[in-house]
Length: 213
Image 1: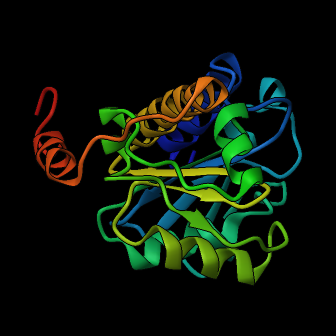
Image 2: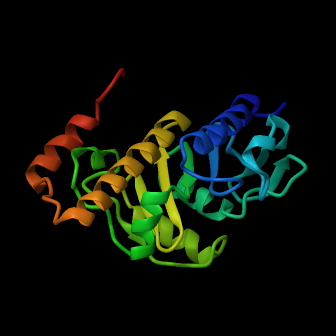
Image 3: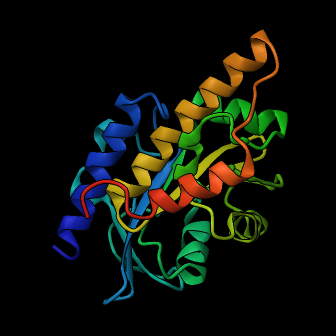
């Protein structure tokens, strides 16, 4: 089966998204890029993650043409492809409807440096302007706003996280949801004190080689 390993990753991490409370049903989407082949494995549109099997995952090229698979690819294929085109360091995209990050997105708030773990994205999580799901405009907004960050909020929609592989992108999505929850809870009680710019610059630098290399 073409891109079997990548298809299996899409299935496994789709189920992890649900188990981690980062989405429900068939909400959100994820993909993996094989840059050598120029092919993307992406989840099918509108099918509950619990029902998706490896053979259901759709393979497209970087122009969005379906190469393998019997289902329509995710309706958000366009922003996945745009991120892969613009960011040579990105080989996986995870889009969630996680509750706290989405709450921030519905308020049209960026997530600032209220906790150093925001460095999984950068010195903040920026906010992309609203556009209809699946639209060309949304793809442009996501790619233009994320810049060199590893996460971006989609106004009135959700979160997009990127990484060099699926594990890294999923980790960004999980950690940013935690920071979003902390930010929400701080705002409920008072005014959060942000980590200053100089410290965030140090943290972001340390994150460049964090963990097992």
